[in-house]
Image (cartoon, rainbow, N blue to C red; front, side):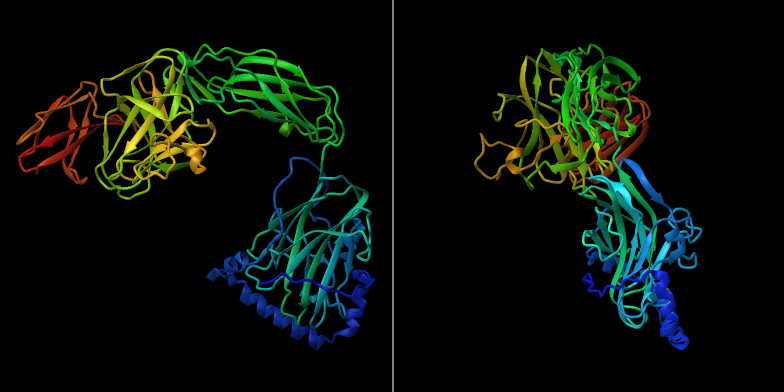
Length: 634
């Protein structure tokens, strides 16, 4: 439905003056007839939303408004709990005007809300709001009712906010225009009125906020809410009823210095092993003057905080620069901090300015960097999305990212978080990782080591994603200082690897597959070449992995299976640390062929009836899982 543009003939009478004219112009019989028409429509539209028509209507209607709550001072507020009929509004400094066409109706302009129509915004239990409806005019005419606010001092950037609604499920295009006069025009005929916005009033049965910003200051400025509908009235087809409640004018504080941003503890890694930590933490930030006056003086406090213990490891106070209105400035601490112990650390910046009226924006904290014993990562334990590993059945595709090792260490395993959007996942999906040498900014080089292969059975990945850890063949790989690339491989396209956007390092993420578009660099290309800017939930572990939730260790050394190939029987030997284990055996197409519960130590598996092929044993114990494969040859 199109928005109505209203053309009106302006008159100069107040609402109260128009009421007397109405009594003489309309007969009682006509009033009853038109009221009966709209009472019938209201009964019908009260159930309108049940068939979803309201949603369909709103989806195709242009609603031009915005909502929100500015973090600034309230300069004027009216919840309309005081009498809000014409006399009550005028007593509080409002100027209600009738500017419709034709003879005014029985309820011209604005009036007190009624609980019988709906409850008010703040309590929902009374009629403390202001309302206007189709009886503003007679017959079929245009409605144009102005509710002009008292004059007030308005600054650039101030906002008007109010809530409005109409009858649940109404099909009538009741509309509001929001007007502003920096010069404070007190009648609709003033020449300085500008329109801030317009919208069709909400018909979902709830109060809906509108928020508009002012671009021009005025010492005696006024706002106006206009209820405007063409071809309206008792005999018209476009009007019904609206309500307006909780009107606020927000303005900036006289003094308001904002802590706008703070530097990260580490801009390259989110998890950093202490053995790889050779750079001290520095502290810098940005402050901004969001008040109405220029600022002089004040201080800013830089801190390094351990979020696990709430202890402050570093603090330094610096002076704030003088800030013009709306100006921003960079500030920095003169000292740095060298991290020597594990912890979950973040930088924090706190503003201290005398007379600052808005404490809500005085503190800003950075993201956490975890200093660990063993984990190297670029994700914050979060997964915002995921990207596919494989490029199609039968293709050995690989994706991954690199890490810069600065001091010699030993790599023991790779951890990664998978997503599975197939239910169930096709059986037999193998995944493994390779470790490559790499020259910075160049494609991954020589393969230095390979991990165990993990074969996924249906349902092998928990809903919402799951972390997995693969040990290196040979258990470990000594690393000297240099850049190393971790590639995760898959031979189809059923699983995806989680991604995180916080740390973005150019030319660190690379991808390859057999049919990848050219040009490539030795068969590889960066993710940026495909306009993808992410880091993967993919980690190097120097020592024992810290991933403890839903961990699955592929080709685990804690499981021994023999003989392999087998014919009639397989011996399963579990390490002593695997207590009360549950064992599941899957064939190559992912079907469960056998299970044994509460196993400790050794057990035997009868495979005499099993067909020739490869089988996967998954052992679950104390919240972790371990897998290994064996072959039957007949």
